[in-house]
Image (cartoon, rainbow, N blue to C red; front, side, top):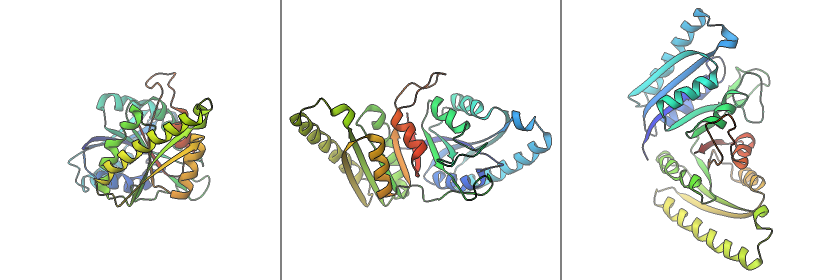
Length: 287
């Protein structure tokens, strides 16, 4: 897979500085175009021209860093508006292969991502979204954050063998260029869907799913990933995924999203939403 373009909304006065090294890491995998975007929230700045000049300089500095990673086409834009609306409008206009945003996961603090901005983009974007997990070093201080690089070292791929899960595969092929140490391919047979099945039917499901996982394993082993393993478990999907995360410690979780997108009544699949909010790893949600 060739990554054609990437839209990267950044927060200059928050976690943006710690996200840039991760964006550089992604860019080195091969991206033809990167669009950096900072939205000055009109509700907070009132369009202060002094702030705009400062923010424009910061974005240009970050643009130079991404160009140094080998990306020939890098744009940096500073606009005023409601951040998540501006991000979605750019996404609709640019049709990026990927949107990259930041999140504070379980430790939400005011004005930081996966509060309102990433949350809204997660629910309404029509393209894949990579949520980079930013950690707070000092609770309540939005300027003391950190983000671990090496984001592709250990990849956990969640599959239910659906069309949405199939769309994740080209992204994992792209990530293989980062030479991850290990890939775990996981499928959960959700007990809520099996309660009416007989023991013979469950045995048949196990054989079928094990064969599908073996086929995926063989496919990814051809990409020279040193260790590819499969996990076939039965239980509550969210609980089982989080349990595997605790033992495997992935740096990246890749999963497909189900549900309607692009409307006010947008619904993200329950499992995908829970993992984005509760997992400790970075999460790529593919649509």
